[in-house]
Length: 405
Image 1 (cartoon, rainbow, N blue to C red):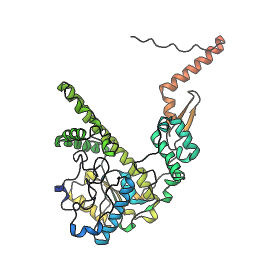
Image 2: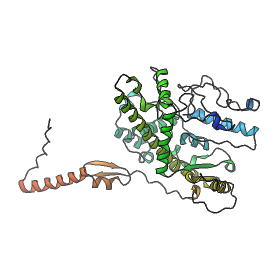
Image 3: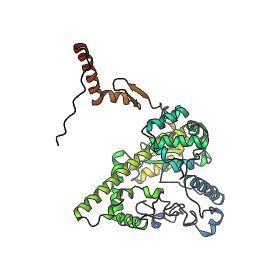
Image 4: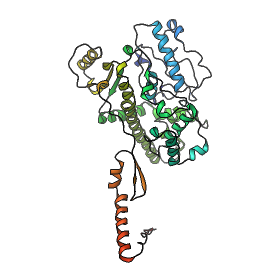
């Protein structure tokens, strides 16, 4: 989201004072319609050294993950042609974007802002979509629940556009590092869940104190009626307040209640997004690196408990570990490349003949058997058998509870 010029508080954009004269690229170069405002690498770089690194042909172009990968990799390669002894740090944002830079062959043709879904596709039931995907690619279909319609639809589109099975496209066997292994490092700052949540909640409060609400209100006024379909319009911190500022004529108590409800939802969605990114990191990126263990240096992949980095001595020890200088084992650093990845079992699909339903997901049948619905159905089936044996006819259907109103 920091690609966008708008909403600097909401996107927690790095301020000039915080950059410490370190050149930054790809910040604030897009408008809210995903169009370029300026070259994403010219700003904050010395004009005498930047000419050979300019990313060309950025005007009148829509930005998406594919153009991001093309332009960032072009910039990195050109930068190192000029600066041999420098480092480029890719930080923050969505893990999918970082993954797309780190690994080659992880993008497919559907990874852009366009979609081939038709209105009739949108109306398809999840079971119908799952059945269609299962006919195309049973291996990939077994990983998803029929309710995950958005993902099922996307996988079907991948097959139609690429004429390849999604399971083959996403196979780790086809992935390789984009840059030389001796120059590639992956450092994951991690916090225990309780500390992470506390930090995220505090960050939202700080954003509100800095003027988040005024920023959101101004953005909504400026784009009223524009029907934005870009990522910025779905940013956490914006969507929770949609329509809020049209209610300013309501009593102050009601407005404050709506406002506090929105802030609470921002915190909740922020925590959920953090969990999603954590899962992506350890389910996808860690798995890809593990399958590349013969072509990736093990101590270049660290998970660091950042709660220990408040002490300078710990930072010094971490630097020694990073550069492979002999040091004691650090309790707050895990070398994830050395942790074996257990193969993921496909999502199981089991039939409950008692309830006449299909149960999806590993371990879900056990939960279903313990559920009130299943236990009630079992009791009903037993009563039906006893009633039929005693009276020679079917048990009458259960009586509906009368509405008290």
